[in-house]
Image (cartoon, rainbow, N blue to C red; front, side, top):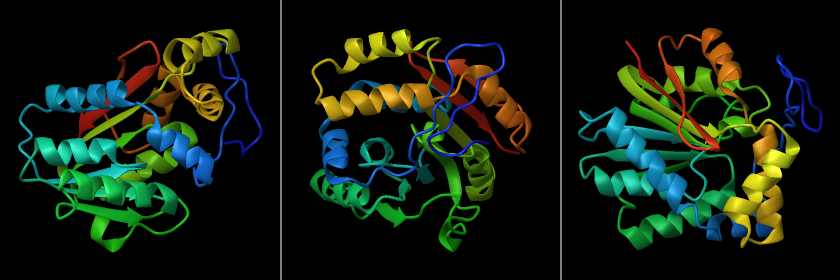
Length: 237
């Protein structure tokens, strides 16, 4: 796997994948991201979770790469009996998440954990602890994508359900620019640039299927769920 600032051409051609930094810690960048309106994809994530796992009644949920924690807060509100572990490597993001959890009244059921996935051992309280393991928009940040799938395997309890959603890399840089214009035209320049960079850092379906084939996660579905998002979901034995 290539490191930050480098790129590689994927099989079958198309735009090169350009990795971006794993953590978002700069103040203006965090502020722009946390203040942006991600309600549509976040609602889509929660709707997908409820649709694909209709039998889930609420238990222990681990969110890897929670950012400002909008999705784990939504799930905590939707599943009153749940306890959610919201994990991120950025202290600035977790500070935002803490304020949001208090304002929504779920701080007693939402545990915030600072952990840079792949750069430190799995916290003991997360090992085999998740009845559901979720992640949104983390995969494209990782230098080594296998880190996410390995971490999911370690954090998942027997029989756990898994949902990962992330951006899908467009076929060209021009296509990426069109998506930025369509969905982030009114956002600050720093966020528009972040969105463009994230689109170029994202993976496509065939790449994710290869990643899953190299992991111990078998039988998962990889599905394009919007013009810019992929979802990966399944269950563990």
